[in-house]
Length: 304
Image (cartoon, rainbow, N blue to C red; front, top):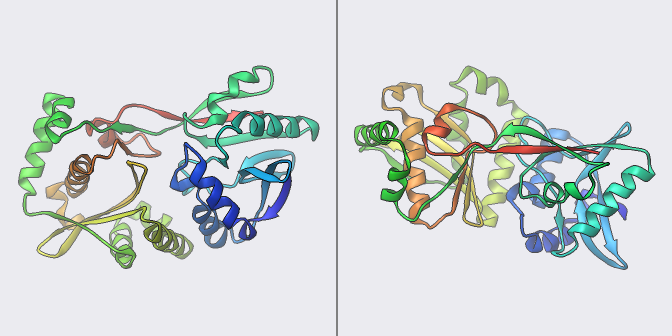
């Protein structure tokens, strides 16, 4: 293994990212590049793992004091992980665990998806690695049709969703370019909690992510409008038939219409039409996620 500056790893990272079976936008080079430039304000060193002269894995981890952690910002990191050549998972994990033991370090690795190979293989190291339940991460498995989706819901929830969609039948959900990120900001700052979260650095990060992911074809920035006025904006990502609902803004003038519910409902309907397989609500146990049919799921924290 060796260390290299993040900015010098893009070509290698892109190659490994395309081969990683459990990849997501949250392990892309663009994600970590924007994170380091706009929120961390430093360029991290990245761990590269090799088989002879061939790089087979990139671990975006750092060592603080004696603890190994993924490079994250808790405000924005819902999932994380690493990129690798398919088939080298066991070799990479074995080398990482050996490195931690050899250097007498500890590791606190989170938040990991349950399908991450670190989580899947942690039982191979019962005396070294422990797995803990971390954040709620509700996930909706999408059926083949809208009617099938409605049939999944309880009678009460199904009735309420239909009622709200009828009430907001004039709402149109429009797909936007990154320029529309300002609409998201305008709605977010109307919420006291989100206004505090949405610092200038955070706005710069969101804008950069929107631009980079749009270029990759991953951005799903959608605005629900009535007569051209935004009532809700969804900031989501689309990747490998999975929608990640990352953030949203609501126009308080239209709370009587339940704009967030209408926007998400219409987006789920479109996702089903587009043959997406999952609608990932990401971190948080808000009740509305479960009313949409999402099932309880948690991210995982590994300690070594």
